[in-house]
Length: 137
Image (cartoon, rainbow, N blue to C red; front, side, top):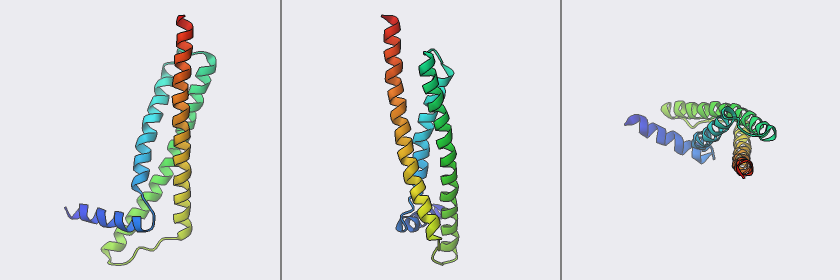
């Protein structure tokens, strides 16, 4: 119970600074689904050489985004831990504004990249369907 209250206080303090560290978790869950889908496609290569290359690139790009996300998770955890420690010591948390701004920019960029890769995955579904229809006709 006390832990939940502390988490709420920490989240509130971070939100005051525009550090929505929960967004990192949500983005991670979304990216995980796209990544698992790309791995599924890569494991079932029944497509043309051109589509297989697109699947490979999608999977590779997902791997790269997962690595970027892990860095953001580390930053978010650090912000959370520093804020929690400050609140426990009844002090106001102090962050390097450069680091905060870098985090926000990186998160915004990653959100755009994940959205783009999701669009590519959806486009790939359409291309696979079209290829399958063409082969069965």
